Image 1 (tube, rainbow, N blue to C red):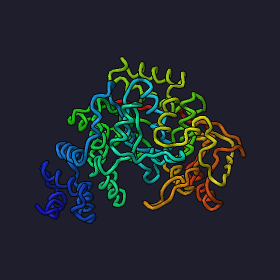
Image 2 (image 1 turned 90 degrees about the horizontal axis):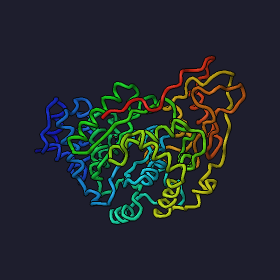
Image 3 (image 1 turned 60 degrees about the vertical axis):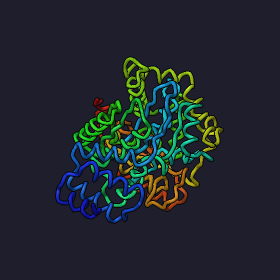
Image 4 (image 1 turned 90 degrees about the vertical axis):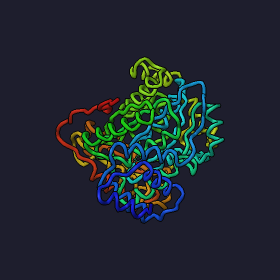
Length: 435
Ligand code: URA
């Protein structure tokens, strides 16, 4: 069959056979079909959709487009979490070592920042020397030794997703539910997990802003994961404002270190970490309930064993482990600027997408594929939604390389901020759990 026929079939609303979807995944992985034809098929799939059977078949085909991690039995259950993406969402950095400290094996395949959302790999690479491009033998040996590894997708693991994702990012086809499901789960299937927890973000900074669409995505993810035999839970969490106090790569490493040390003031970040970790432990059979699992995670914060494992990960992956005890060694932007509240009142809105865009202007995110990140750039959010402010009081401190970037970031931040006369209702971070 010609690839042109596959494009025409989907364009006209036809249903693909599993063999046809194998052909799409193979073409993406081996580069045998030009980008413009793959892009046309992606747009047809976005407009016409894929049904449940097609979504499962595409996910399987993408998972089989490369190798699996092949970790075998590690003596502990393998669990991972995946977030659909947010602003200030560096939860993986604290969660992975804490989950490992609780007895899970955590092979965490992570991604880079996309648009206004940050990526775990970029955050890790802000630690001087930290390596995320690891070959399979190295991942396997670290998993055996430490029980946890944070790494990027390689040419070996779900290569069809790598190729398709890059095209989706450049062709406005990211928000297609079946394509998101296949993208996320093909990577996770390659990890051969015993438990998967999905953090499906809801709000202005998420792929889907409204709860109904996010819930539909969560249901589709669970259905397809089950058809692949992967025990999965989806936790819907708030992404109306950024998570935690920091937005930016090195700044979010700092946030994770505060969480692992049990200090700082980021209750939303902590709630999210504990809820996701609690479900990982419950689903993998190490805790009798998600609440009990969250208690286990809390204990690993209190005894600093999560922090110890984070230090081991940094050392094992070539990073400067001194940053763990001396975060001032992390990269810093050349300039900073404090922004003051223009009036008295309460913060009623701090739009996550707007703050994420401010991060891009400051140099913490990519404007295009070739942008070079400034690891020290970003925002420290002194005030968040619900906080009372006085006119002139600092609401945020911006970090960037120069005055022009600071000005552009300040403009975006101000547009994202609303101060009103009355305190808004406090919204929970964990909204719903779907199984
Ligand atoms: N995260 C992924 O890995 N893939 C998507 O398509 C969306 C979010």
